[in-house]
Length: 259
Image: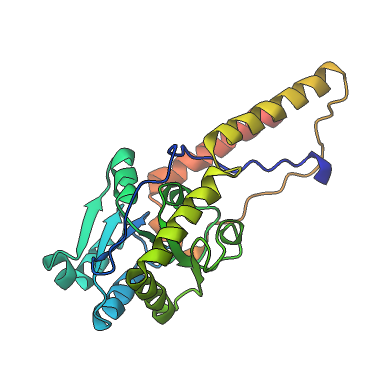
C-alpha cells in the first residue's frame, strides 16, 4: 500500500521579497521565540539559560517571546532581571499578524524543543528572513536547515552551543545577512509555500476522482492502527471535560462507521 501514500507538507504565505534588514555589528541581536511556553517538549526554560550565557559573554541581544503556556510564569521569573532591563519582552497570546510582525523585525528565530514534527512557526519565521538556531531533531528539521548555510542545528540541551551560534551571528553582520537571504530562499523556492500545498491537494483529489470514475479506486481494508497514547506527562494536564468529549467523539465515530 506504500504506493498509495501521499505526503503534502504544510505551506505558508511567503512575502514577495525577503524583508530588508541591514545588520549592524554594534546593535543587539534580535531573537524571537514563537510557540507554547511549556517545558515538556518545548524546553522553554532553556531560553533562560541561553540568555544568561549571552549576558556572561556580553553579547547585546533583544529577545521577544510570543505565546503562552503552563510554564510561562517559571520562565518569566528566571528572566525577571532581563525583563526589567528591557532585553526580554513577553507578548503573551497575540494575533497571528503580530507574531509575523515580530518575526519580520527579528534576525533569529530560536527553538529549543526536545521533539517536533515540522514546526509551522519555523517555516513562517524563515519565510520572513529569520535565521533558525534550533535543536537538531530527526523529524522535519534536516529537511529545512543546513548548518552554516541557512541556519544552525544544535544538540538538544546544549546551551553553550546555542550561545556560541548566537554570539557569532551578532558579531558577523555580513554572514548574518547572507544567511537571512538563504533562510528566505529555502521557503520561497520550495514545496513549503501555500500555493504549492494547494496545488498538491488539488492534484491528489483529481487523481482519486479519476480512479473512482474509472472504477479503479479500491478503499483499503484491514485492521486500523490506533494512534499512540500521549506521553505520560500530558495525561494529568488534560481537563476532565476534554477527556469526556474525546471519549464521546470516539464512541460516535465508531457507531457511524461500524453501526
